[in-house]
Image (cartoon, rainbow, N blue to C red):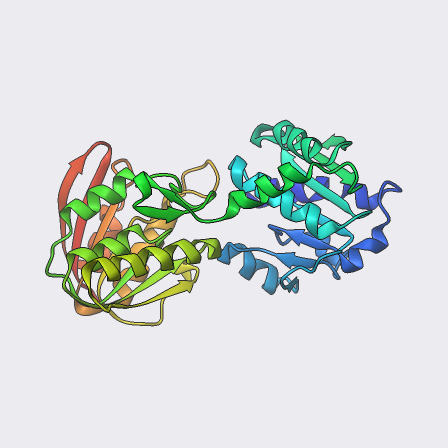
Length: 348
């Protein structure tokens, strides 16, 4: 969403706190799940914010928000449910438990991003829900009465966030991560063409649940260490499990670290090789500048003789950026709407 779009969602979310509907004083010990920075911080500075996506977490810190783990019995819990429904349902369950008996859960979504479904889900969980519309968004809320909460559904939905086996049990993932319930076709194509002579220290930019990094461990016997850079903190648990399994399967002791990090802000370390299936959107709109930023950061982080192996959607015009930052660029494969690219010897 654009800055103006998120401000509209935030303004709608806080409407019930700006009226007699909800006692605004409760915000002093309230919790905001999936919080976003905005003008609301000037009016409710005591809210505890929870955000697992690093760029948004950094925005909150720069705006002066308090980031912390929430405590039970918070009284007031605000949330911005994501589009992925299992992830959203797990978030509703977390919010209800955090609010406690007599507490209030308030959620808001754009009308075209599942608002009615979200409201219906919260109603299934807790009973009565109130709502209103503003700025093409729907804000809905409920005062929690534990006698009306569907506890079986609460347990079921809370478990939806746990890492689970996917792809025939070969991988662990969780809802809300990129391509969370499958092996991404573009990443699989990149793995198919990765050379087995990658060596030394490697980085995986935008690592997700660790598919590319684990395949590097399995295929490249001379790799000694690999760092996984990922903006979504919730990816750490399945990624670590997948890397540990790859090490067990190969009998190799490859050092690896998971770094909760916004790649576009640079890496600060040097690598012999980098692999990446970079993101190119946040929400629905294409943002090819994200992929270009990944390429620039990779060039800066590679040793002078280093190599970048990249996969991207065929329509994304990364070639000019690659040529500006690498001495040698080669299109290795174009298939099924994707392209695999090798870029060597970053320009200094």
